Image 1 (cartoon, rainbow, N blue to C red):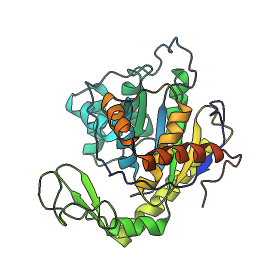
Image 2 (tube, rainbow, N blue to C red):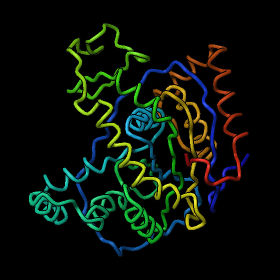
Image 3 (cartoon, rainbow, N blue to C red):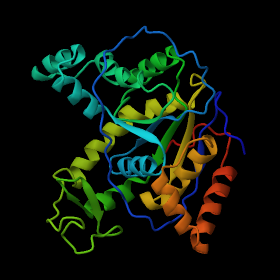
Image 4 (tube, helix red, strand yellow):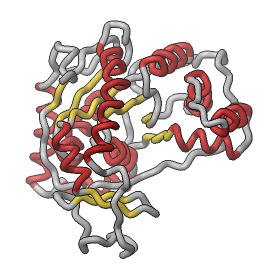
Length: 314
């Protein structure tokens, strides 16, 4: 199967279990750059080989864990909108001062201000592979981001939708414990800590998130459906002419990870693995079971290339 980068339909990939452990990761951001909305377009024509990725999923679906695994394995930058905004405010940039004033008044940042925060970083990346976290959150923001990236001749190339059932996520967050200083997340149903109640690395006690309860989860879930469903429909429509929408199903990040890995490798064959990842993979592939997992992930990704652009809808 060949992945296409004109306009392609969404696909749905069946889960493949694996025993990998969840990893928490955050990428540091260099000095904030000024924003020029109408700066010159890149002279290098986009050919679909650069990963410019968004990932969507319900609260607790595993976006952070899966993004971190991609960043650990491949030469990809993970960009957090929240981190970029805090950096602009700390460095007193023009957009940072503007955002700080709005936030101080208790107001939400307008879409155009958020675009400036994000675009100032994206414009400096040229042909680097990246995953953007936290933006866009609404259809309006998605259209603004698309228009800007198209203007830079650097359009989105992959949109991933993590399709995890509501009841699965509710069960997951009920069993979730976190190490607040590091952000490491554990689950008593899978990915348990070595010693119950204590962080593997530091031995410090684990805590529960205040919002990990059914009532708050239901409100967050409704907000997700209200804001994200129109975004996914937009990326599945004929309006989207560059980014491939891929829907991945599973109950845990460990099930979804090999699907995501296979989709990225087949869509972007030139993407480079980090040296540490290559060494680790060479060791693990000596295990026949792991080799079979790799083969199955690739076959499932190829076999699931379907024509229905609305598969992600419930």
